[in-house]
Image 1 (cartoon, rainbow, N blue to C red):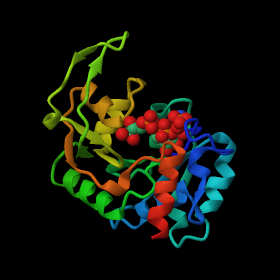
Image 2 (image 1 turned 60 degrees about the vertical axis):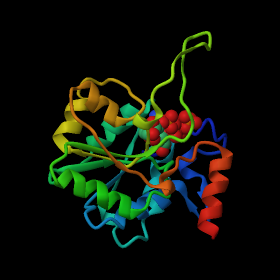
Image 3 (image 1 turned 120 degrees about the vertical axis):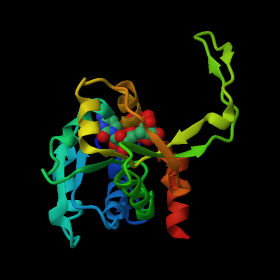
Amino acid sequence: MAAGLGTRLGAAQPKAFVRVAGATLVEHAVTRALDCAATTQVVIVAPASHLGEAGALLSGHPRADDVTVVAGGRERSESVALGLGALRDDVDVVLVHDAARCLAPADLFDRLVAAVRAGHDAVVPGQPVTDTIKQVDERGHVVATPDRSTLRAVQTPQAFRRPVLLAAHASGADATDDAALVERAGGTVLVIEGDELAFKVTTASDLERAARILGS
Ligand SMILES: Nc1ccn([C@@H]2O[C@H](COP(=O)(O)OP(=O)(O)OP(=O)(O)O)[C@@H](O)[C@H]2O)c(=O)n1
Ligand SMILES: C[C@](O)(CO)[C@H](O)COP(=O)(O)O
């Protein structure tokens, strides 16, 4: 998923096309996805204004023929649905990944695919939260303090059996992640251990963190 504007980062170009350590976020994400042994196709969902640039980014990669580029939509969920429309017929497991989580390692992709192949319909990486989380009302007053031990901060890639993900997106509804659409459709989502490297580049300090990691 690379079709967002990156408003919170505030760069001159869409976030996925910002460069860090010599490559764009989307290139970093796609090369790691292609390093996963099970990957047969990568669909880059890009802003309509950046389709040519997205196509050219991976043109020198040995697996460039396995990369498809399509235009995204206004909301992330719409972009995912548009990406699903470009999948080859033989794809049976789909991983939805944010270009913004550009350093998610191939090993994380491998573990998610293995969990789906082991029989789970939907599998997402998550990490325990380290802050106490408060639920607040519209005035900012606390209404609940959920038991922290039951909470997970979830990342991407998120892995699904293809028919499960297609059914979840059939309503055309929006959600902040794809697993939420599966949950709403009555499906079961498994959370497995996430990876620190799958952090999301949202603000300038996240971009600096990515640069530090890639530089070290
Ligand atoms: N209409 C959209 C919105 C988001 N995304 C993608 O979904 C991922 C997670 O979204 P986010 O981090 O919110 O990215 P942006 O929408 O670009 O950022 P912002 O909300 O700050 O504008 C990103 O890789 C982004 O490119 C997308 O493909 N299509
Ligand atoms: C999909 C996601 O990365 C899971 O944590 C997250 O919900 C994306 O949120 P954003 O506001 O679109 O960055």
